[in-house]
Length: 138
Image (cartoon, rainbow, N blue to C red; front, side, top):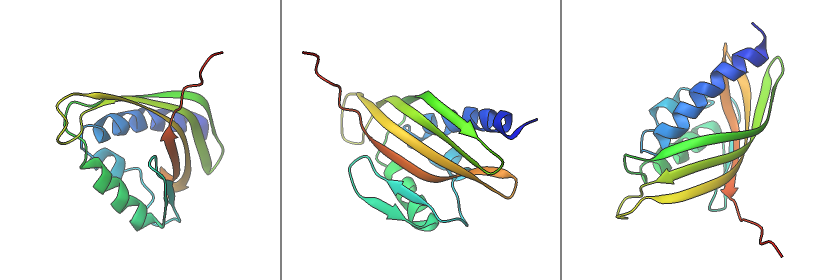
């Protein structure tokens, strides 16, 4: 099987991890986050986190803001993989329940994620996510 096919299979697991995350469960994401490699996270609310442990700590902390019942879908616009590096870019569309809020709210992020092979598995080493601002039509 080619690395690209392996990455496509991995992206199915990435989709599952995104859905679990917006329900407050960071455990599936923990299995795919880089632990030994440099890592960065450009957060939806602004700011940048550097270093694999600091990035994981931020992901784990942010997941605690979500209540159960969230749903997420990754809409992939582009995706590619080589021998040791892969990426996808597109949108993460979600309906989330935040602690202390009575109603679910929609969320649409523009996302770029970069992965490298660590051992024999793809690991997330960079995520840039920000809120999509819909263009106003004239």
